[in-house]
Length: 274
Image 1 (cartoon, helix red, strand yellow):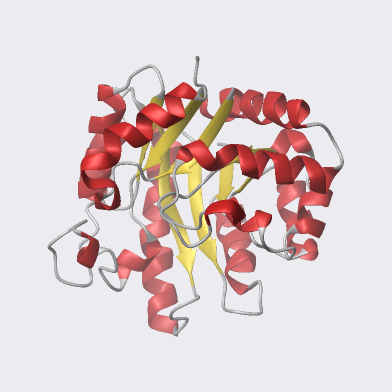
Image 2: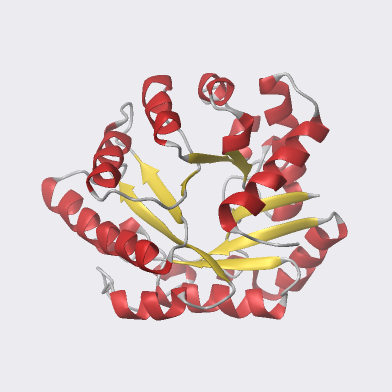
């Protein structure tokens, strides 16, 4: 059994094919967490998790890019003008739902814009979501993307989480940090997820080798970033086996070991029973 801890199966990209996409994952024994990025998509994530209670769970959160621009609006995610308003109370209320297993995706994104005003706004919105996670004692599902060629957002993330003195699990989604900052995250006790990009890019290999297997989980980030065999196509959870195979190759261990440990990590981090 494999577990996709970060997908967006509720996004408009799937349209009328959503049920078929979920059925393909079910046929392969793949469970999933579908991830909210705004109040509206968080509601949708909970709704679909309730429609598939035996295989889908949800997160609720506010993506850092929404703090400065409504970058998903062309996909039908929201009709709001940019930037989208962050409603802390609405996220908190949604977060209490029993199908919600984490807060996020939330965090910092300097890739498109790293001016001081953007950084400040993203930090303010992120810290409010950390407060929510602490209040309801659920993990953080973090999106962190640095300026190209640097680890600046990761370094800022480390400082923020240290200052806020968190004692809840932290999951670094689509992790892409260098070896030096990776060791800092390992020392802090955080968890990491890897997806399809590792099947066609070697940039992540050294960090993956460094991270203990009991800190790693699998993801697709579907509908984005399909693995090598379907590169350029719409991604889906049924492709996650290719990620597991590549992870096993990088760490020089068996596929079965990856399957067993990453699924056990999901149970431990998100307190999911299945």
